[in-house]
Length: 126
Image 1 (cartoon, helix red, strand yellow):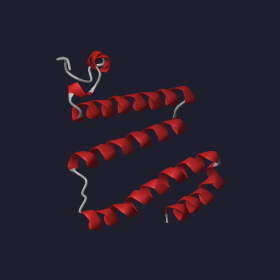
Image 2 (cartoon, one colour):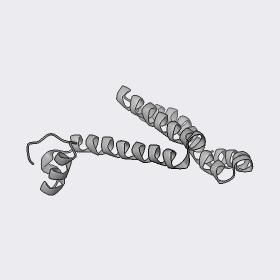
Image 3 (tube, helix red, strand yellow):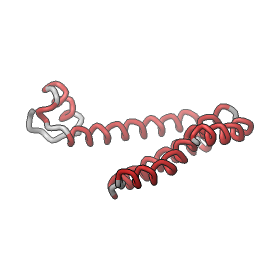
Image 4 (cartoon, helix red, strand yellow):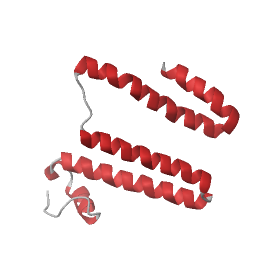
């Protein structure tokens, strides 16, 4: 099903947008894939997204949409800056979330020092 959606959307969008259409088709096919797989996984395993994960997903989609639109309305250099800042802030957030899941004793002292310097974790050595 994923392949059919991807090829169908790519067939239409590549004709209108060129290579950009292929990228949009990739994104659309994964969104459709997620919407199709989630009910199956929920039925088989009882899996449910938590409110925090739903909120994070919506914020991520909003950032993706923002960066995508920036490349159509802003000069290239400014859109690239917005995309870069979005990527860096997303990476920092994910790193902080991962560090919260792992005990400070689970990372090397050098890495912990770097995380404290970046203010991703509180002081108080491993």
